[in-house]
Image (cartoon, rainbow, N blue to C red; front, side):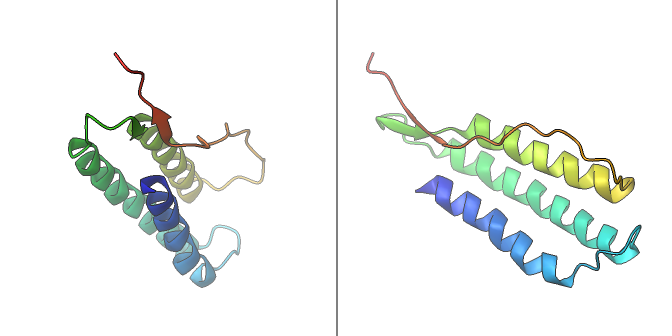
Length: 107
């Protein structure tokens, strides 16, 4: 359930900002919006750390915060890289984590 909330938040941020972005080459407006998205991802990363602190350690399934942090970092880096130096050459990007829920083994 938490995975859907974080994924939904990211999608909402992109959906709200994307229509306003002008997609012309080396657009200052585009760069400004991309940097705003990268900053929002930084805020989401901080929220994820706060949520992780409140994890129920007795739960049988837990949210995979490490995977979430890696994926957010990857998205943020790609956005910042493009905002600083747009490139027409496509880059290979690893797939994001599909499932943020993991089952905890009984000990």
